Length: 128
Image 1 (cartoon, rainbow, N blue to C red):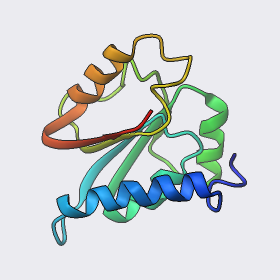
Image 2: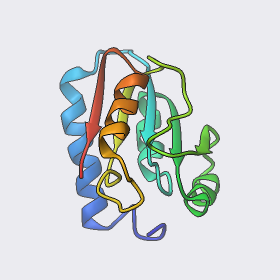
Image 3: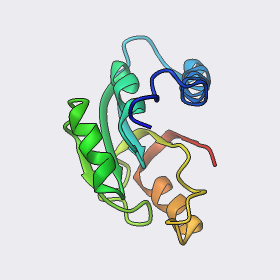
Image 4: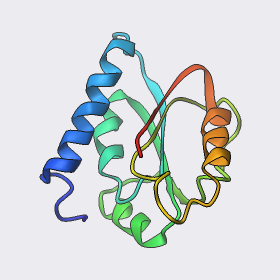
């Protein structure tokens, strides 16, 4: 996956959808605090970094090793059902291709956690 994420149609299309969805919400000069929940190998984080400060976490340590290869620093190992950040920490939370994984046992708790770490008026972009 690490080798094809930049070019494979699925990942390119998904990133394009994220940015098209974000466009109406972005204000000129605004720098966001962004969390990618279930960041995988970190490709989305690298693209989102142009919008502000980024953080990511993933359940799989192997995925985080790929994030490190991309030079990402603000990453940690964690579960989507126990997000290791304070309440109302982020303007934007992305969660792509995570909630449909078998490893997520309680998707309702995961959604509550995403909501908890979003600032008031923040935006969550989630796909299944």
